[in-house]
Structures are given as structure tokens and as C-alpha cells.
Image 1 (spheres, rainbow, N blue to C red):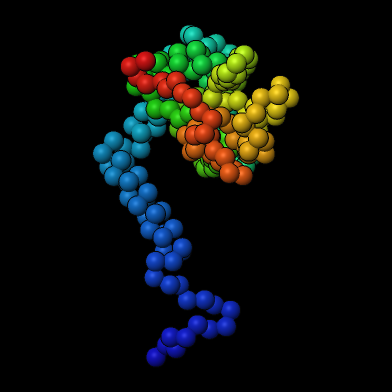
Image 2 (cartoon, rainbow, N blue to C red; image 1 turned 90 degrees about the horizontal axis):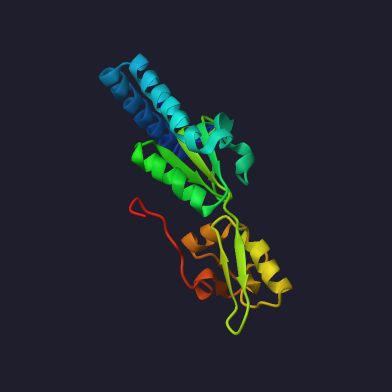
Length: 212
């Protein structure tokens, strides 16, 4: 009869441990792929993916030209510097361009992801299927007077903004001087440090939806 105690150099796998969870996740993924193969056939799946990507390139290049690229590694666009290729990458540099790109994607029902500064994002080495919209909208407007305010686009780096405010004699964002990430990410997650947070500074945010 086998000795239930762990032998030297070998550890017992505990129920619900990481190995079991990983194997279960891979098994579920394999089952999904097998079901798709049975439903559509492998060749049909490949055609569906390729057709979607080609259609996305055609649609986006009509408006964004050279800002649309194919089979681009996402590693340079994340803080972790890892990640495989995306089928189609479209780079936008303003809120207006971002809105135009999103309206095209919604109108043509194309699969997409949005990537900003790339903090707290891990991209699989297998890459991303569909379209990634790389948002580089960073315009900033300082309004002085009795009630000074700052208006900025989503991908402005939060720590940079805090230091720019300080250089102009504007107080309130001191807590963010060393906080990584973008303003958009900070608003989404209510980033905070040293007793302050973005909710204490935010006056309003403009959001983009399918309806405008």
C-alpha cells in the first residue's frame, strides 16, 4: 500500500491547489475550442478570424491611414513589457480621434480592446485577437483665476500632471506626485496615496458611450 506521506523531493498536490486550478482552466479552454471545431470546423474558424481582421483594417484605414498597423507586438505598450501581437492596432492621439475609432468599431460590430498607459495590464504571449485601440490622448488645459482648474484627456500621466500643477503653483494633487498610471486609470480605480485620492480632486468626467 502506498505511503500517503510526501516523499523527499516530492510535494503532495492539495485539492484546489494551483496545479489543479490551472489544469482545470486549460481543460475548459480546450473543451471550448473542441466545441467550436465541431460546430464550425477548424478551417471555418480561421477564415472567420482572418475575415474579421481584414475587415477591421479596411474600415479603420479609410479614416486613420498609417495609424492602423497589423500584427503588432503589444509588449512595448505595457509597463511590464510583455505580450504577444494584436491582429490590428489603431493609435489615436486625441479624444476626438478616440471617439471616431470607437464609433467605427461599434458600427461594424468589430471585436476590440482599449489600451491606455499600459499600467496594471498583462497581455498574453499568445497575443490579442481583433482590434486594440491604443489611446494616446494627452491634451492638458490649465485654467487660472480665482478658481483654478485643470482639464485633461485620459492618458495624461498622473504623476506628471501633479508635478506640472506644482510648478504652476497649483495645490491639491501633491499626493499623486509619485503615483504611476494615467488620469483615466486613476479615475476608474479612484487612485489614492498619502491621505488623498482622485475623488477629492475630480470635478467631472466626460464619458463615451455608443449613444455619444
